[in-house]
Length: 382
Image 1 (cartoon, rainbow, N blue to C red):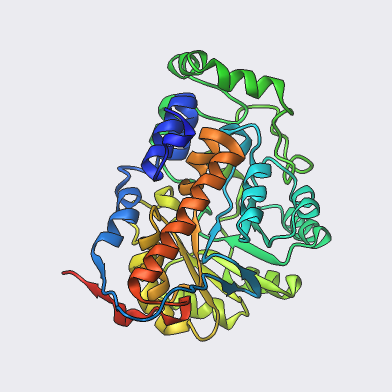
Image 2: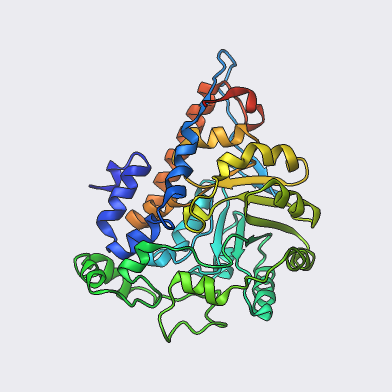
């Protein structure tokens, strides 16, 4: 199977599975507990039907949107995700370059493997810095200052991960940073030698946003342990309000799921929220961002920008979210599998397919721009 054989999300996933050692593939692919929410994230879109309009003169279609003051050529962005140079040696460098080629926004995680400052110097497209609230308040302030110094305009605080989700696939394979694998996990690395060759012949793996603050060279630190031991479960709305004031610019909360929390985010001065259940990797049984979108947009859509992510695999999924009032839609696994499969070329191919799907579906819906989509062109099955 080659990159040219990949025509949709599932093709990229299969190619990534062929190229990645099983512990790394399962880290990307897996969710929490029984993975009910992971499956529901995509299934939720199937309960919603599009009602197209015809004869609307759609030769020219504008896909651009403005999100938290950032102009994007596409209504999708690449959500911040951790550990990307484990998936492919190009990591966030591939992600940022592909996003720039398509004129859209990308995110860099606190657990990112390329410096946000390096990416900000190299790329003109909007960059989001996604960070976690650590027990070390000085670390939190330092990370925000580093983002300011790099010229990043949008701060994104993840609020659904004050403790780690129960990711049983990782427990079975022994996946951790640095690697402390089970015997079976070591065998999976041995049978994917090209991944190992790339890993050892390219830049040494690091977490540049954290390396100056956290010693990752001692005992192995699973992602679950990082969330549970390093992050601060005592975080409150007062803490976030102080951070919003200190940042003084576009500030987004990722992981909001209730109307009450959305209203509080608006009240403390947030300019955006992302409806997200962390890709089904935290609280299994949680509602999906798409399920919650309509009521939250109706409650606060005039006060801040509402975004959503989770389970997006098709352009039609994006159109359904935009029709309910989402300002833009975050992609996660949708670009991580292409990244793992082929680096920058994979991400660009996936974004090109998404752009083509959205453009085609907009024409089939009879919409010349995102503003012409509304709840009127949706029906929900019961």
